[in-house]
Length: 418
Image (cartoon, rainbow, N blue to C red; front, top):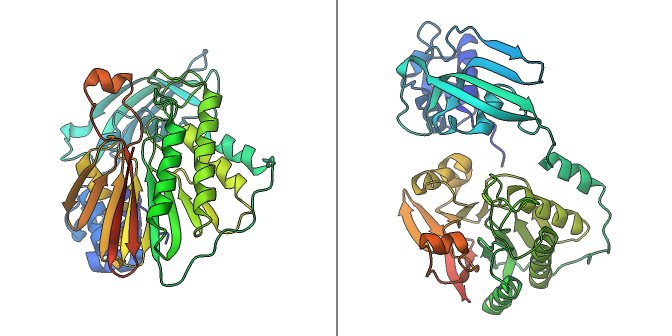
């Protein structure tokens, strides 16, 4: 369900001020009703803006989020532009080039950041990375010399994509009174030194099918938990530009990923309807999105197969009384655990059991905090050169699946060791 309220505290503040101007009482309860959002969410948003009491929102006491500041923009003959302005930004975004470009009104697909200088406003220091801060920010940008491929470009291409063959029209229907099956394929890193990754993935799917053969399965979720591909560009770099060693050409790598997921979907669709949940990683944000959009086109006429290709960094589903949120997991563990309260707040309130499934670390770990179980899932891939040099070796090669009862929550965990 899509929330009726913004997830940006700055937008919440503006709406609160408008509600007060329209005659709303200066209380959290009244404002929450006016904004149609949970009172706890409202308090969380305002706390991130250093607003502790509802009465502080009154016009004469509202904190100055945008103090008077002489902003300037300068153009150069070379086409470069310098921008000097006061920006309001989350603390953890202060060193993020994409966030700085956005705060100054520049499209990251069209402009390159050449340099940036930021000064904390009035000596303010954030208490945590999720707090909004004011910065005096100066940046210099130039138009991209060679425009890269964007997610919008991929969407435009695939809207008119003609399939080389017609996929099947019908999958096995779901059964009544059954369970939900979830198969996670975390961090395959197709294209690194693992030569038999396709065979390993096929073995996982085959074993998973054997392990659920005794169950009445309503629906099956396949979740590539990010870093499905090892690199993201023709230059064999990650999404952020880090160069990597690879055993495959880009075309070979991409086609291997296609074969793995098409084989998995086709095999599991003989049992029950299938939904693939596409999660991007820090290695392959563009390439994995391209794969998921390709699969969406491939199966667009197939009943019983759904492909969630939206480029969101977290996704979640409710399985009866259970909630599962998926994320790649490249953020610190404490922030990872908070994602479910922010990204799936309404679902969390409706369900009795909640888990976060993530990868990134190529090893297993389970933590429980605040009624939420956070699982780090293992990978099928071997350690690449960087992991070997850094000593991150020795983890078991495996994938994990989960069986969910609609009333009782998690019923079974399936381990497939390679």
